[in-house]
Image (cartoon, rainbow, N blue to C red; front, side):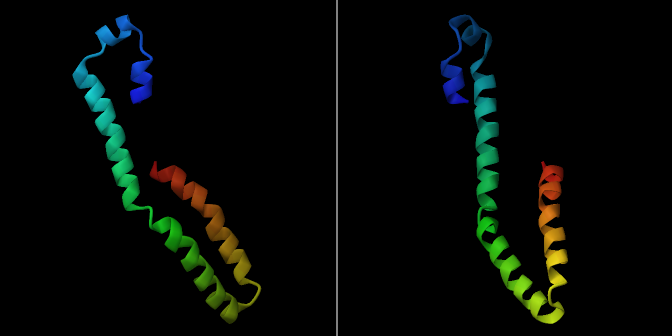
Length: 83
């Protein structure tokens, strides 16, 4: 965002107030701050999936791969809905 504001022409910079610029930048910073809270799930999620997949395979056998594939296929749908 900051680089884009530097590329604005002088007439466009005159139409944009400082308050609008600060508002846009603060919204972006809030998104980064919120996403940093969930960065640990990128590590623990696949680790849990692997451990629980092993225990499920030990109990059910090869049929567990259908359940694991179903859960993995639902991840993009869940991510799309939470945006």
